[in-house]
Amino acid sequence: MKKLYRIVDVNFNRTREGLRVLEELARFSDRTPVPVKALRGLRHQISVLTERSFPRPELLANRCSKTDPGRNFRPEKRTGKKDLVLANSFRVSESLRVLEEMAALLKPEATVSFQDLRFSFYDLEKGLSVLYRKKLPDHPVYVVIDPALLPGDPLALVKPLLGAGAKIFQLRAKNMPDRLFLELAQKIRRETEKFDAFFIVNDRPDIAALSDADGLHLGQTDLAAVNARQICPDVLIGVSVRSVREAEKAIAERVDYLAVGSVFPTTSKEDAAVVGLKTLKEVKKVTGRTPLVAIGGITPENSGRVFESGADYVAVISALINRQPEKILKTLVKTKR
Image (tube, rainbow, N blue to C red; front, side, top):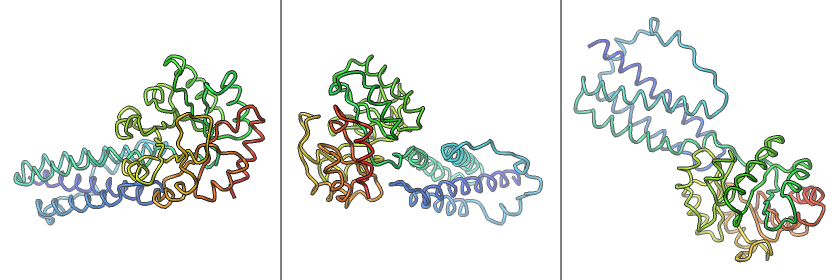
């Protein structure tokens, strides 16, 4: 019996410690939303249930830190925040299962309660990838590559822009056959990797996954973000919005950024409704820390007003075609004060 209480004590500590690490990562994250309150609430519930189910004096009396095998354990090397999140997530779920099994022996009436908490954590765990997903780079120009609008090979535009410092590229190829779409996505991915630039695929989570893209951009008629996450669980997801209502819905679905447009009239998308700077300003008020990309008819001449209206990034397509793209890129960057 004493060994069972020792097992309870060890796994109670492991559960709380793992949750606390996740909670701290969430608390100091600059992403939104992060599940700080939910993690803290679960940690409190587990503490209350454990202390109510197993006498605290028994747990402490059977604790033996000096001879605990865990003292000699050396954790695996962590190579990034993802490793840290996954390691502590596994620690919590495994320890909760042990507490549930110990309750079945020592406090049978508490078994179901421990099981409920374990499944609550499983639900929470689905949203923890927000803590380690990549973020949009700190570069204000978001380049959209649409082969249908380009006179030649899209890479002829991508390569000089990379050399000029561009850090974000989205591939939009709505009418391209799937095999060609994937082939082009993989080529652009290889080029962007050379410059540590961000690559996003428009509309297609399957192409994003197969090309190892950093992100996926979705429209209002595409898959919902929650469904796309089932195909691309770790990629950054952005959503196009045209109103405050659509923005609030997207934020509730835990997207990583919003794209508002069309801000101005544009020739690069036939069905683009102009929402103007007024809508951009209104959406900015509800986004919190969620990055905001403005798109549609943006040029070096009007981009300053777009940034002043609350945009964190400007997405450009037509402005870079048939002109000096490197020069236009640098001019756009300078308009963000």
